[in-house]
Image 1 (cartoon, helix red, strand yellow):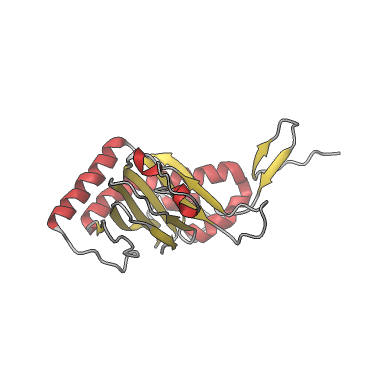
Image 2 (image 1 turned 60 degrees about the horizontal axis):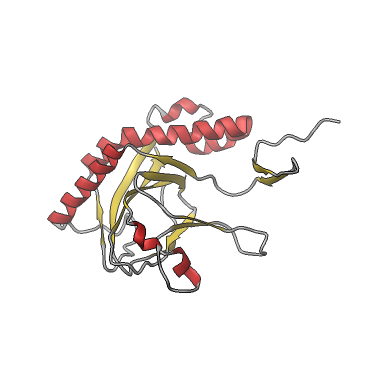
Length: 231
């Protein structure tokens, strides 16, 4: 009898069994060059000094005490080439994991069954903005436009995670929480929370819901988000 083999994500137990996780959207985790993070931060600080108005059509203006700023088109174009290298790594990794099962995703993203289309510019960086979050700020559950979204963390004071308040989202203060599916039973995981750190980057499908619970420390948390589209 042939043994069952899976290319889905799984956990190998101590007894050599598998717990398989075949469902749900993939999330790509990586780290960007600290010099690029510094470049993002410096440009964001420049925009904040100019106090340019935020264009809410690109993302929900959820911050109350802090403020988001939209990067201009020239800076987005300048950043696109570097950021697309991580999109390539993301899908190369999926192809390594899923093999031929990845073809359907490729057709969705690249129109044609040709992974090289990514390098020819079919995937473009459409929007990018920087969030300066302050004490008592939070971001409710939401999703993005486009085909892929990303988050890069520029400044993450560790004290925002240390909160003595009890219950609910306070336990996740300042974290990024991804949410997928409906909570049906205790065996079904629908949320994945992470304490971010500087230079950390996530890329994920644009429709994946995510949110940031409120934090209560007098500190500034700075992140950059953006959306890729297929053209």
